[in-house]
Image (tube, rainbow, N blue to C red; front, top):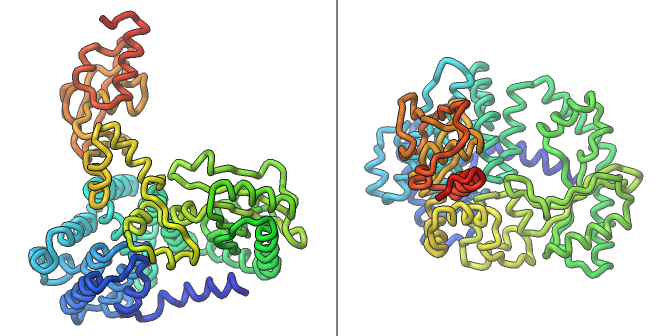
Length: 509
Ligand code: MN
């Protein structure tokens, strides 16, 4: 009953008219009077600017601004980002200019909005692939200037997807395709699992209606038969954990989202009985050690399937995801997946990079929005922060300064360049084509003889700029890097690759 009820509540929510009070109530950081005043001012400003405008769906335009802001509040974003979300379509769609926004709300908010406006001006190219690359490039460039621009864009896109019915079939398809290929992967890369799932399911609905409905039907049928056993499993697990003295933060049932379920069904001839992780029980405990202890307790209660234990705690997924997964025979022999993780891992898997803003709020009551007995998590333990720190240490910046810059500007001192095929290569500022070559492959580095940037020949010590397309010219004969390169390369990766090869071939000194 529970699982289904939640599903329908979410579906209906998107149809209702919402107010600025809904946005304020959904904020996960403390709503100080200052923050509230800023958000209300942005709302009044947007309301006046969009006055009389309607969305294609017939709704008042401000509903879209409010929905974008609500999505941001749900993601844990703070007042300035939410204000920018409320104002995000003002310069593009009304007579009010960016200058007026800057006069009223300051440089930072105006900067965020100009980033969103730029991102919105998508050039339509001839082929789908080129459109895809162009969009991807814009997203990454925006990211390089301020990650919040991308987060607002995701929140905006989510509401556009929720109201897609109002558009023509051709537009529905184009927007859904772009969402599936560009926005959902970016949400995934940023670790915002909840956003990724929602964007994928909505895109799926418009890209492949037949299979979407088929999957939905299969899921509901299976769920109808099994939900009482999932509920029973959560009760039993809770009891066993408590008996063993493990502090339980939360235990709850969950189901696989439709698009990932469909991906699995395709591999199993649409036989839902073979999808072992359709149902899951998630266990949230305070410490990492508790995770392993809980795993033992679960296995004692329910027999595990052999070879299905995945330890993403010791080996996190590339986007930082951490959890233990195991598949067991639950009550009545129901095969289900049990996910075990700490509260910190759970928040990070849902909010990803956005979790940073929640943590950086030093007021202690933010945690009440998640779990009653949560413990504040030190910023330095966050995977994303760790990863960014590693990037930063390559650049030789000291940590304190980095933490400061993190708050506004995640990817400063970092550039994104592209291969001719559109793959993204991230590099430190002032990196050269040689750094680029080594990042692609050591053999390409060793054999590099020249480089083109945006189709123009450049010297090998050229300083690559954000968004440039770099092509490395290699020679089959040259197999050794040049000693000269050590004078201008920027990454430690290329330095050590060059040194190693020179040493091996006795060319150093
Ligand atoms: Mn918009």
